[in-house]
Each structure stands twice: as C-alpha cells, then as structure tokens.
Image (cartoon, rainbow, N blue to C red; front, side, top):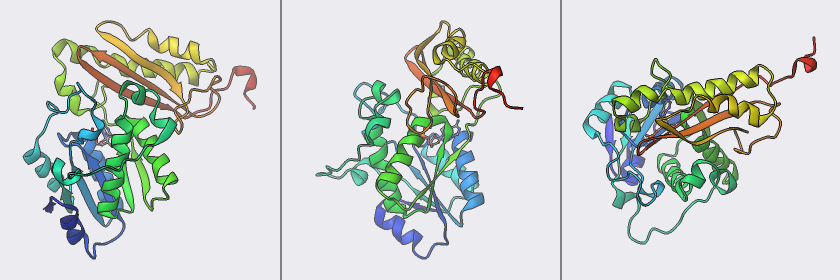
Length: 286
Ligand code: AMP
C-alpha cells in the first residue's frame, strides 16, 4: 500500500492502475462503517484508493474541526488490512494552497436539513469531493448511506458536472443496539451513549407507520417523535424524497426517514430508507 501526500504522487501511484479505480473518501478516525465502504470497493474494483483528510471547508465556525478525532497510524493500518492500494492523505495547505478560490455549490439539495444547520457545509463537501475525484481519476466513489444528504448532494454534482464517476452508496453499519457508527460517537458520555439508540428507534417508528399505510407526513413523523425524549433534543425529524430532500405531502413513493438530535454538545444524524410504497388498505390491489 502506497501513502501519497500530493495530487502528483497520487497520479504517479495510479499510472497504469487496473480499472475500475474505486475511491473511498474519509475524514479518518476509521470505524467499521468506513471499512464496509473499503470492503465493498475492494470487492468491486481492481484498484482501491482511500483518502484521509479532515476537510476544514465543510466545518463551520464554532464546529469541531480542531477537536475532530485524528488517528493516522491506526487508520493506515486498518486501510492496509482492508486491502487498499493507495492512501491519499494531503495536508490542508496541499488541498487548499494560497490563492485557492473555486468552490462547488450543489444548490437546493444542499440547503435543506444539514445544509440549513451547517451553512456552507455541502459546498465544502462538494468542493473537496470534486477535487478528490479529479485527483484519483476514479471510476467509482463509495459513500455511506448514513450520510444520505451527502450522497444526494454528490449525486447531484456528478450529474450536473457530467463527472465520469459512479456513486455507490453502502448501507449504514450499526452497533447492536441500533446506533449508527460515527466518528463523533466518541464524544458521548456514558449516559448519552445509553440514550443515543433512541434516534434510530424514532426512525424505525416512522418507517413502521409508513409501511403500515400512514400516508400523512405529520402523523408519520409524530409516531417517531414520541421516541425522541430527554436527554435527546430533536434537531429535525422528517420524511423526504431521497434525491431532493424535499418532503412530499403524501407518502406514496419510496421515501427516506431522516433524523438528527443533540445529545449535549454533540449532534447525531441517522436515516432509514422506506422502500415499500405506502398504500392505504383500500388502495391495495389484489
Ligand atoms: P466521514 O469520515 O465521517 O466523512 O465518513 C466517510 C464515509 O464513511 C462517508 O461516506 C460516510 O457516509 C461513511 N460512513 C460513516 N459512518 C458510516 C456508517 N456507520 N456506515 C456506513 N458508512 C458510514
């Protein structure tokens, strides 16, 4: 496994590499969720590139950029064990040298929910991802379903900019109690960690309501809201179209239940896809 620090080193390392080339972008502090992306890329691609870069552009003022967990040595060991061919770990000055000025604005899908709580977040994500795609010249890019709005933003960018990259979304890896793995889970104290699975229970309750025929968004959301009790404080809970993140008035197509809640200073996010279209009992065609 080669460790590279600059775009030129990445290109050298990948010259003549077998295709498809799969890219797994990460901010490091790797856990089993990241490694599921690596495993799927390894299974599907001749060459696998993983990036480790805590991207300052996607953090707002007062967010956790400085204290975001960093674990370079153990990350490299985990990527090597996962069969990665090339690691790209640039420093901030390499990614954003003096004079850097261009950014990618993904438009409406990046303004809702996470985008409204973190203004500029998805512009930062889209910008770094386009740079990573261009640097790696990847054919496929692997993203986690856990960050569903991020995946929707990247799909929008790929289509709008005609990028020759296929987005692959990998299902969310969870703890046995339902909590989605996240690098930010290390911020939770014992009491917060014990309460955290309620976020997933809330989403499950919304999903059950819809699959049992609830087509009214407010009633479906209310079913989940009952789970979001102290010490959790809701940031949002909703049912949306998975591509646009617009909330349909009537839940009669495949939709996504999304949620975010604060636990002390930490905000967790999660989502559950609702695959089966909801049908009121009288609409079922036999
Ligand atoms: P991050 O390092 O948090 O930027 O995450 C890097 C990639 O790993 C993103 O595509 C995330 O969606 C994905 N990811 C993070 N947590 C999980 C998880 N629990 N299951 C699956 N993918 C995940």
